[in-house]
Amino acid sequence: MENTWPEFMRHDPIGNLYYARDVLDLFADYVLLAHTAVDEIVGKAHSIPFRLGGESLPEDGWDGAIRRGFRAELLGESTDTLAALEIFVRSDRQGLGLSGTILAALRDHARDRGFAEVVVPVRPNGKTDIHETMDSYAFRTRDDGLPVDPWLRTHVRAGGTIDGVAHRAMVIPGTLDEWRSWTGLPFDTSGPVDVPGALAPVLCDVDHGSAVYVEPNVWVRHRTGL
Image (cartoon, rainbow, N blue to C red; front, side, top):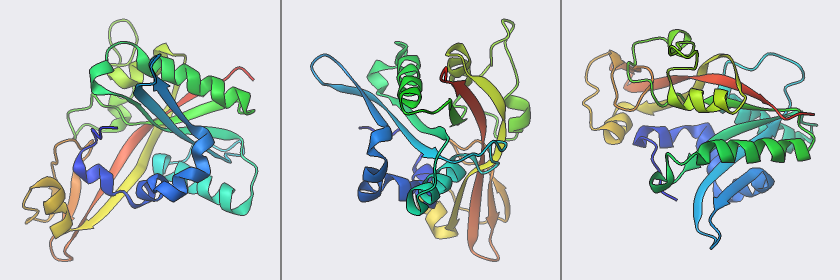
């Protein structure tokens, strides 16, 4: 399916481990496809089970859910929570309510497998001011009380509850040459760099020839009814 992520987002080392074809087979039971009556795929959901153990949702969000999911799989640990890693609707089918439908299907899928909740490290797609903190943006609401962010709004309308901010949900390190190739920007001055599509500035260190992006996400909880 089409990939609408900014190029630099495709270089998260933890995410690339999960999406590797042979590895993804380990979690095939937690990948859902949305399709038409003639089996045309129009959307999908990726998720991973992990062990939360009654603790608070982790600060390392998306990356952390994948790491914990791999740990449980490799060590044979029991799992108690399902994390949704990606909910995607094909661009020509957006605006038709399919995101909510896929969310509901994922919740049902989690309940059928004994999970009491689905947790989602949401990447708020309406955040355009990368200098506004996620702690501020995540809890901003419209006059009707719903979140200003469209993706967070979809989750709340679907019954989700905003739990808090995962301040280092995704960490993408790279050399300056890598960041230049990913973004087309010069990366020639140390300090924060505004990168299109980012939710926070990328931190550039010219002296050491590297830059790192630390993305905050928003944890949302969906109860499954168990």
